[in-house]
Length: 326
Image 1 (cartoon, rainbow, N blue to C red):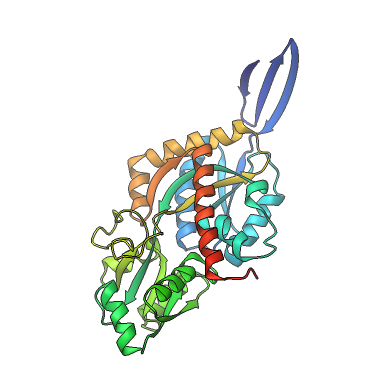
Image 2 (spheres, rainbow, N blue to C red):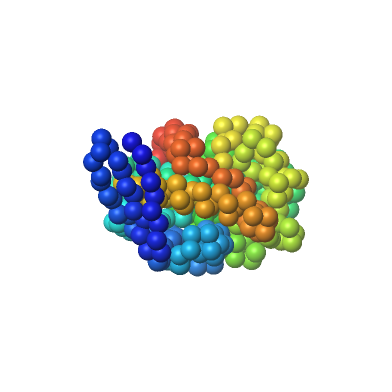
């Protein structure tokens, strides 16, 4: 069987030759690609998506528009992707919370990633970490644990960017490990959590490094621990939880593109190849790295394996926590 791609400005035509019989399949190569984002404009996920969308226009020769379908931790955007045509005209830029965690903590999220979506390309990994507000006197993770134990009689609060999120489960794990009564304070995203930490309304927060990075560098927060098997390049002075004796959280969260199930492999490969070239550009890589993420290209199969492994790891943690899907 021979495969030949014939491209024009608006359509891609696959011509298959099988035993002398010609079969022509027309795939949409839209003039506009819609990039769904499940969070509001101005947040970390939205900022990364807009950097990619700007470069995708040139790489693909099509208009790429970011469309924010914010709400329910990305659930609304994920449902929109499920209903979208499987022709590459609609993609979903997401991180682990929507794809790996929501299906574990919500009974009927309205989508099943394993059957409704196909991983297109992974573009980065990132770490979650614990940060202390400026009004909290502790200077390190161990000092924080001791401070909660003595000043709060073993009770403390930690802000997290969303309920039933990895940060919330991590708060519980930390509390159990050190026999503290740590309670999560869920926010509707990283931005309001940062605002309350800046105002010392909450003594500590647990979220993505990219949420904390700017204020950490400015001395307004103090990052004291991060997930991962090694320290993060953006803040090499901050130890990992594993270094501090809390292991089992070495696998990093991810950012990537997803398409509706049934999207032709030729379309998936086209986007994956384009993104590989985009994130390899020094100015793009530097810009993304400055946001606190680790830029890495994961082609479709590798990305699918990473998502599967990551989901299985956290499925065990969620189950062991006793959390009941809502």
